[in-house]
Length: 145
Image (cartoon, rainbow, N blue to C red; front, side, top):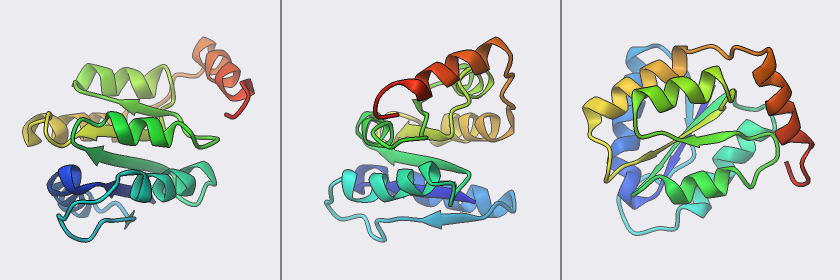
């Protein structure tokens, strides 16, 4: 299950992501918003990130205008490793080396063609483990993580 959330600036991207996930036959839960009207990204990104951190959802994809705000919110939640990705290479490395379980995207800064490639790579790239697992474990040992 994939948790989805956005704010008004990321709403159109979130709606396109839903269609892509439907096409890929992947289940998701939309944490909102349900319309493209002004709203505050923490109100939607935080519950979605909590669903990932608690294990209720396996992963999450969040979007706001730049992706920065939702990424900051998500990384406040224990068990979440959110990565703001602007390229396919960043998405691949976020999974391969950092075991990112939340992907943050900029709805105003990322063209759909690029976002779709990023999402497809992020969803299919496995975590390498090994020396990278040691580093991820160190992140989780930090206070508040």
